[in-house]
Image (cartoon, rainbow, N blue to C red; front, side):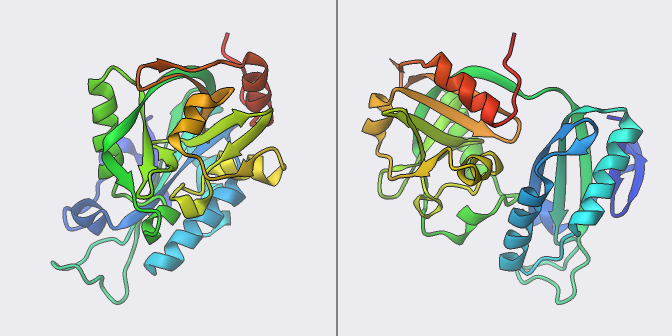
Length: 270
């Protein structure tokens, strides 16, 4: 990546900078979205922007329009010669005085970066986090905020156990999410995923499956995960089949996994 998009213009990555007084840096006051790039275009832009705008309404944070993000993404991909990969849009509240209260008229810091790559279908081992729980009643569950510390802690916990991701339960002890993905279980031939009211992030891949009528919402206790025909983790950049949970092998369903990848337009890994 040699070029980034910062505050409305393209610039060399090594010249881009953010103020040390930026609230995104000092307080995690901001939002982000990670898009899949296909043929130099941002995929599912409308779903991503709907989530960004919903979070912005909660935070009272100005965010760019869909048209501005679309144009920025195209220009950035072209400048970096990227046809397939991912793009991350970050919006902070910008520079502010010391203290928690935001400035009355914030000037947000907005930047986008792109990385080459392809979406993948793969496998993953998972650990149920004992350190982190998701508060399903928290308004923060509804947005992708810059404060990712709980998920970082859970990911570290999983890594220490030799796992690639961590399953996050809510305060009621039911499944909410993982650190970076929506949980989907296959049960009696159906695909089921936790509802937003369970503390699940309103994921974009999740929205695609729900919109197509391919997945239904359900309360999922850990035992249902153990007993499932198969367990999958999905997000904008790929799909993974869970091979084990807490050291316990889980069943695999290649047919179901192939169908899931096809529904999300993700090429099967060779």
